[in-house]
Length: 618
Image 1: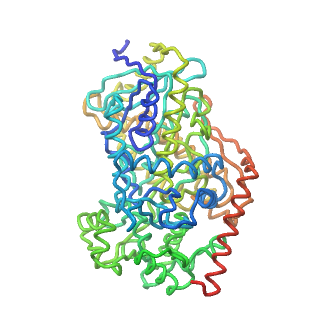
Image 2 (image 1 turned 180 degrees about the horizontal axis):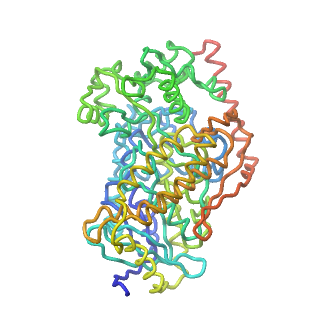
Image 3 (image 1 turned 120 degrees about the horizontal axis):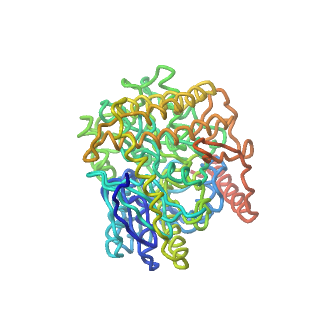
């Protein structure tokens, strides 16, 4: 039996309406392409909004010593030297122009006394580099991009879930989707398709992501024959809410620590001083006095000439330190750590961190101007994703592009805070530009009815049973298993067990029964989501098992090899063959000589600065 579906034709179809998708669509439309955005949720409900702390770009407004070379160095160092150095170069050079462009489009950033865009400190950044709007930076960027997008004549399809990419030979020619409200089917013909679907963190039970974050883009790319990389690297943001249970995992912006927030254990100790890795020695304060001096300089608006507090170490280091304190019996009352910003005073907190003040008052009954917050690691971001060309953002499948969290390369083993927002606008722009260029030379692809009918058949398969397991039960159990066995600390035995269990979860998902209706059926959506979540989780666990070292967002308790610049510089490449997830390892390509020189130059500058400070030049 054939199902009816509606047909649409576009030059460029963008799947996802967060910062990356919007910026890609704007660029494609500005370049003359007929452009559509398909979004699983509502316009404006994007995870970009969760990026509260700021957008990293070397504008040099807070410190004239900053520049693209320093930002490039910080990104490569933070990535544990696994980032795609071409992407890191494009990003460091182009991010300032993308931020200034947002300002021209109406984004209202916080200002310095000289009325320049203000910039704040963040973990892993040598200088204050994050352009911000209080602690609502992502929200302001989404607002600005949405307003700009409306004027570019982009068609928007809200509450549509894409389940299949159409192909003609090797190239992608469109996609098939269903409407979440009434279960109608739609086929889109497109000369280029851009995946901007965000991350995968709903695969873990404690996460900062909302219901949409089920790895749709990662799975669509794998199913269409594209390659993924770095899937073992999951960023557990060190500070998510831990109490009450209903808000577990909700993000507490790094901006709290960027404004001088202090992490303490149950014994009142600022434990981060005990967890500074060798590679970061010299960059961070070694005493409380030095740390307090830094806060004084930040508050007074002077250049921060002293070393930053260890609370601003990279996210992987801070997250593991909190977990270690909890494991040693020094955790907070509800199994996290305490984060205190009250010493900054009510006026400064309400001005600089208004969203955090309201979040804790409304969700936890905690007044952060007086009391400590309880925080702990939460699955927040996937560094891994679709393997793309650094310049064009095209995947290994012609006609299929990716940008934002769905793509990989820029962040390597660990993403620096603030680099996500500048990633979205830098590579969203590039994806839109090159997808549009490609579409100019192509005829409109025809929609292959046989492919569409096969896709529809797969979509309605869960509804055509006479009974089966509730998909909600499988969803909860699989996420809890991922939290326990593919979480912040991993071992070979647990990863091997996880792979066996994930294959079983996938079989259960395919046999689940959500009822028979296509209208308003959240169980149906969940039954379908489970299939991509299982495949993406298998990719993560397989990559984690294959990487026999600890690096960045991947920690093997049974392989605590010291991280350094040169050891183990390989990439895990994932693809799918006849329904099975496969993996191979490739060496990291050697960096260009001029970029190596830039790294040396920055290292020398940082060493000289540390020497000055150690000699009393503070």
